[in-house]
Length: 290
Image 1 (spheres, helix red, strand yellow):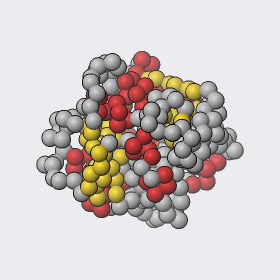
Image 2 (cartoon, helix red, strand yellow; image 1 turned 90 degrees about the vertical axis):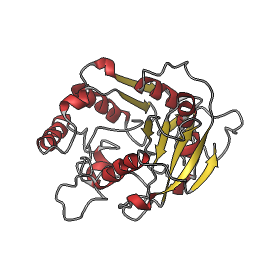
Image 3 (cartoon, helix red, strand yellow; image 1 turned 60 degrees about the vertical axis):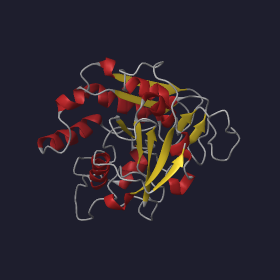
Image 4 (cartoon, helix red, strand yellow; image 1 turned 180 degrees about the vertical axis):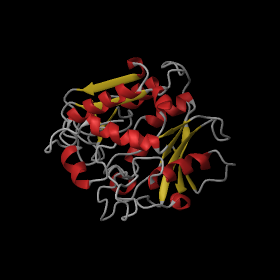
């Protein structure tokens, strides 16, 4: 997770999302309160078990000059996960000085660093894809997948394929998503990374800048890993095209939206996409060579 605060911070409230989960105008969120929420979900089997969580590896990054999501919230995210993991060796926390809110990238040699597609490293910018000459994607994936040696693998190419998301239609999803398929993974048998863009980073906002230049594809091509890029849509309920982290996509009659559980509407759609990738391959709707 990059430039994010604690799990379930908003607790189904847009007001909390804006005032306690981005800035801390209402004070910092209580990790004890959020843990009580998780324990309630755990009793209902709506979140992963403590044993399952303890087996994971986690990677968190935050820019020290982030003025959109207070870096303090990133500290609380790390503290939260320290309670869930079996060992501190399973957690890596990275910080970058003089870096704002977004996703830092190292631009390819044939791409101009002055392009309007890129955000300024210190201040963020419209795309939130930050031209910082910092390959966060590789650092992250090398940590999350230690079985892949950082220097192993050879250069491969791949295809960035657009697919119809209507099969997974739920509130907040766009019509089209993307999947990067490295050369050699066309028939399957490759692991999958599910990459969720940030707010104002969907295709409607910044075209294919994130799905093409995040740095994930280059690592995935070298290490034979598929990358799935689902896409959100912008709407009156969700003007910045965020993934549902405060409950807007759930039924309005729910007193406690379940967006932060395995019963969440968008979570269900994402899991269905992963299931669909494991089904018999069909000809993609359109292709673009990466």
